[in-house]
Image: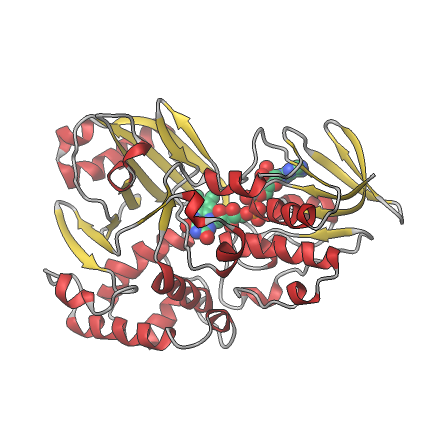
Length: 421
Ligand SMILES: Cc1cc2nc3c(=O)[nH]c(=O)nc-3n(C[C@H](O)[C@H](O)[C@H](O)COP(=O)(O)OP(=O)(O)OC[C@H]3O[C@@H](n4cnc5c(N)ncnc54)[C@H](O)[C@@H]3O)c2cc1C
């Protein structure tokens, strides 16, 4: 009989399984999809490498440093700046997070009032001091309220914070927890953002090395019997001494009966191929105007191998799940890109794929952390992993897998590590 069955081959499940396998346990991962990775995958479409949505790796995440061989991922650091788009007008914003001083030299236009530039520098200086994980505790409020309390103008929120952190939290309202904002701000200061050259899917592939995974195997029920647990799956019943449920929170709730679900934040991505280089920009493009586009990135400018020779790849992030069919959404996005590059140039873009991700993250309003589930469930022998036990992101997923494995192994040090550390 297996020692541990892990349900779900996303980052959390793979981390738990790899940790337990390395500790000598007999472990198998059951993954419903046709490949591992969950929300962190890449695929090839028409010779373009597309990640699932637009997502980046923060190399400063403590769990990333523990779990991943970053050199083997061949990370491409993203430039520490963004290009703020207001129609045809583009202003380069020096990275106010990683390089507050650089803001003054690289800011060539009046994209942010001087007082806001000083406030960014002050914020960065304050957030650089504490241990990163301690930024996740203490009083909470919305990110917008926190930024206003720091004195930031409405213009600073609209031009930079909404599109930039809207792209991270997949919510432009800045209603997410200010604790999380402070933590992510610090992670960006400490290590910036990067992309594995071969795609974000190589993160998952690396975690899966040496792990026994059965793909295309969906678990429909989990039945504890005292000494062991039976997982009822689409490939028959499988017994194990312990089970770790590392699915998305909504499925985890259905399998365990625990009140795990927190709802879903969805987002939509439109990927375009271009024959002509419409924009030499390697930086993230932030849309400071209202519209369907929140941010966009010419990924092939940053990571040339993502597009076939002589072609270019643009990924556009649309927050939420707009009630538009693919053609209508393409027309809206193209219309806005026409405002950036001119109508004929935008018409020359070739849509590669429109992807709607129903559950990209779970909502994280102020105080959300106080209501998160732990790893225990009421089912004997059944533990919970997955980002829902921590925070909705790669750090949260990795550390949840580490912690579930630590519980199985009785590793007190691993069990007591604070969130975010
Ligand atoms: C578009 C997008 C952008 C993001 N951007 C960032 C970012 O920039 N930075 C960041 O840190 N985080 C980001 N995230 C969040 C991050 O990707 C997730 O927090 C993380 O991948 C969650 O991992 P997980 O293992 O907890 O869950 P998942 O990845 O959801 O894995 C769960 C797995 O369980 C499987 N499963 C479900 N039901 C069953 C079943 N019944 N039987 C067997 N298997 C099952 C699923 O197929 C899946 O593989 C983003 C996510 C998305 C989608």
